[in-house]
Structures are given as structure tokens and as C-alpha cells.
Amino acid sequence: MKKWNKKELKEIYKGRIFSLKQQECFHPKLKVEHDFFILETFDWINVVAATEDNKIIIVKQHRLGTDEITYETPGGIIEKNEQALNTAKRELQEETGYACDNLILLKKLSVNPAILNNYIYFYYAPDCKKVS
Image (tube, rainbow, N blue to C red; front, side, top):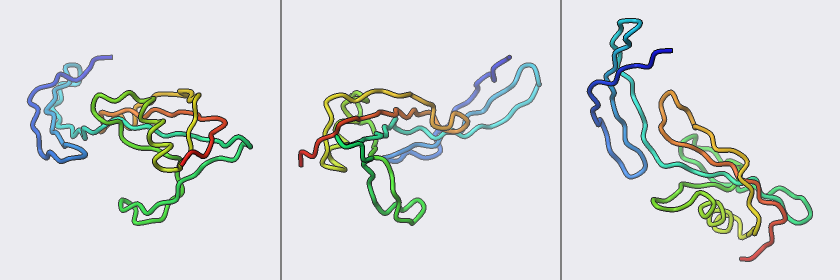
């Protein structure tokens, strides 16, 4: 399979959470030019956490993207120069008050490779204890 040849890259918008770029491309086999739009943002984590008696820990919060009260696994953005595992531990405790000594990486996935450049790390946190 032939890849697109990248030509000019323009930054359309730059904000605190993400930037939007326009990538002009040419496909050598198809002989087609096309613009692609890429959202560049931070990697993030989600933690599937369970208490010592195997109850799943869920976070309830208002999300403005959908303007809904949601039920979610704890999660958050990986800060610059922070390891994904450290982010998972931090977010679990910040959002729930629980901690876990043995977080297990389940999978690292591309969030949406068609338009996003970031990854999500899924962790499992068994036997969590309430610490704050």
C-alpha cells in the first residue's frame, strides 16, 4: 500500500488543549491531491479500577462537550514529561480518593488515527484502597 506524500502543513489553530493543522497531500498511485485535517492533542489515560471487594470505581461529572452528567472511569491527560503509569496513579487518586500499588497496562490504542495524533492508555487497578 502506498502512503500519501505530505506537502505543505499549516497550523490553523493553536490552543491550550489542542491544535488544528491542515496537511496538503498527494497520493502517488491515485494521482490525487487532498487536504487532511489533524487535531494534535495530549495522550491520555483511563483506569478501570476495582475495590478490594471487586466493586468498580466510577466517576460522576458534568461534561460540557455533550452537556451531560456522565459516569466514567477515572482518566485524564498525560502532562508533558509525565509517564502514563504515573498519570494513571495520579488521576485515580485525584478523581476518586483511591490508590493502587499494582496498576496493569491493558492496552495502548490510537484514539482516532484518521484525525487525531494521540494515544490512550488503558490501565486496570485491582484491590484499590481509599486513601483520601
